[in-house]
Image (tube, rainbow, N blue to C red):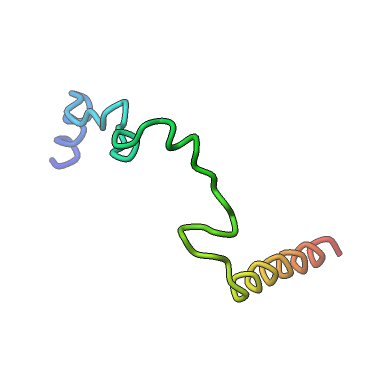
Length: 74
């Protein structure tokens, strides 16, 4: 019975989904020139700088990926 009710609702388009065009509060709040002036610095993201531990983790991930690629190759 539940499946029949769900099937009926889907066929009659009761669940129409979300709006086709979404709106952003941030884009509505600021003028377009703010987004054009924004420069993203990969070393300073979200007000934080990449510290030594973060750099070590990046190098470690690259090293692990390299080791895995070499094992797959040979």
